Image (cartoon, rainbow, N blue to C red):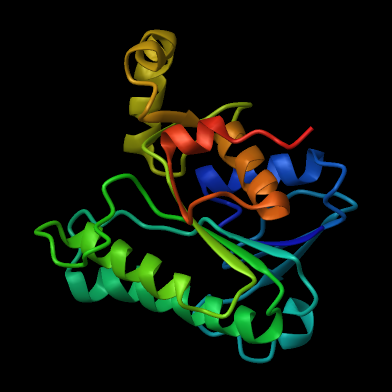
Length: 223
């Protein structure tokens, strides 16, 4: 399986990249983003672009892939709806439309978040924008598309968030994770499980196009 990964330098993307490189069924990973992942691996190649929403001229490098894992995302804190829409909806749909035209047999998996508003009419701005993004991705002519909606994601294997405040909370909560997982199993997952679930879903599909944290944690490869 040949995989394109957007957002490989982010916390979730780092976890997905790790699982892709460890998985024997993955023969190639193309990381697309504004900065390098700063890793060397025989499976790994990169496309560095200044604007992920503008992939003109990159068609030859983006052709012939089986799956795309789109983990790019930003916090809506302090951001206007217009700017958040550009960085979330416009950027994602622009890249996805390009990939759908080049790779109609591709499976596209988008990392959204728990609480996403599929009606696009709720009071919470980020949830409306994410809902619109999900809805329009599901309309694109991919072989299949799936929306991952994790809640709290625990970083594993030395992976750290680039957002200092987020990493602070991860560090504080780390000793409590066994207890929290027992109390809130529907809302907690980790970077390893997200990455592994993406690979399984890309290969064998899933009964529904939207996967919440509990679904992500339940994904297992077919025997």
